[in-house]
Image (cartoon, rainbow, N blue to C red):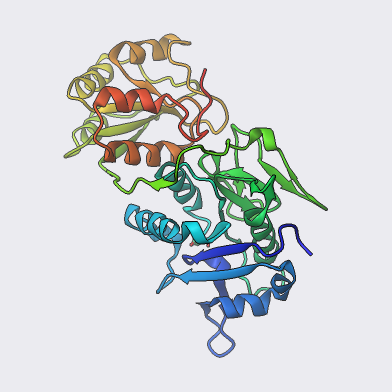
Length: 345
Ligand code: ASP
């Protein structure tokens, strides 16, 4: 018997490989309902939990994920929040880190686990990783400590590791270990037991749960590379209705220092566009001013993304821009850890 018997879990099945099986008649991958999931994973019955499920019709490949669907997910969780101990989102792995990051900023004062999982091989495959991922996700979503949820945050569980959702990135398309959190340790590791690192998990909130459902996607990405031309830079910075640009920089946040480039950025900042400097490196942080090749960015008002993932930067911007905040306030919050997404220096 698993821990926390009698727990009530709510499963949202959005699509992706995890909930699919090969149809015997056609040989094609088709989405399954929860009855079929229980058929493929009979061990679920032994956990002693009760479940309800909401399945997307039709299920989507997560490459088609969108802010509208994040709002739908937040609303579903809000509707069922009081009646369940934990929430599980079955999701394609491709954009799982974006959804986990978005929800981490949309679900305010979360006191219950919201755990996303998926799989690299479909549920019906003999060597599938779906089975372990689902069973352990259920145990984590049900886990309690001193009568309270053990993991009151949005996470991704995949291949024996529980990661903070907004610290996670899909970094491998082939191995079962598809996700990694480069700048924050895992929150739990599943071996013979599930070992939780309680000191790394977000604190239980004091305020009542609520959701932020206004997002603004008027953002763009400008990725640096040697040889980048003024037409490319200007095309991005002159995007209609642009509110913020993620500048994907070298190393500790460095860029070329050509005057045409600095002037273009300076003008964008003066027009009220937020320029967020995020390193192209997976590990480590932006440190504006450490090298001369970033000192000028600091001077013109570029903001540091610290060690945020790309996924966290995109979704945090969308959520902050969706609130009615001044540009200065958005800039200040970008540099502040709201849900453990960055390491403040
Ligand atoms: N393309 C699929 C998706 O993200 C891959 C997966 O499910 O892992 O929906």
